[in-house]
Amino acid sequence: SNNAIWSIWGFMLPLYGHSIDLSATAIGTLAACLSGGTVVVRLFTRVLIRRFSPWPLIVVSHIAIGAGFLLIPFTQIYALLVVFAFVMGLGLGLSGPLATTVMYDASPPDKVGEVIGLRMTMANLAQTLVPVLSGAVGSAFGVAPVFWTVGALLFYDTWENRDKLRDRKGH
Image 1 (tube, rainbow, N blue to C red):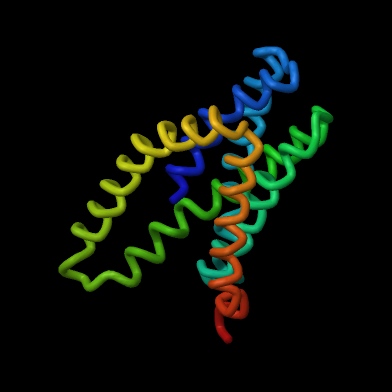
Image 2 (image 1 turned 180 degrees about the vertical axis):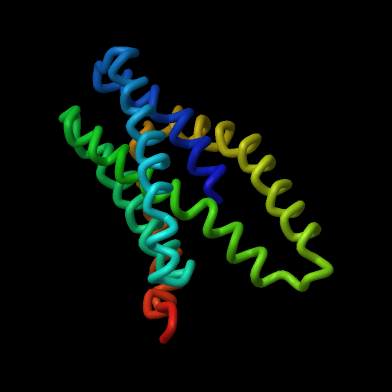
């Protein structure tokens, strides 16, 4: 879920930044770059959803987020970290609202409230458990394995949903 990804980012980014000797300002700026990506993509979301169905956009978003998580631990070059954070923000800013849209559309009309409520429950559960789990893994193995695991899971999800890339509006 996007909430789990946000939790890992918010919790692990400062740890990774500290491990590569980034200043608090540089770490905060990386966090802002991710947030900036979420804002920028929302400016283009209407255009994207007119052309594509939600699923292809979600899959591509997961590729962007997963690539960022996989690549960040391989670099200490700040400019690259900025690019990765921004691209991840683009993915997060697009996939979050679209995932809710997909759930809403797939729900029976009389169960929409229950489905969205269950999504919120899972999101809150993720925000509670993910920092604890990622912290435990990070303290045992380091920050990089946490990032790589998240990236690998997103790419696995992308692979499982690759047939949805062809789902184009009007086709």
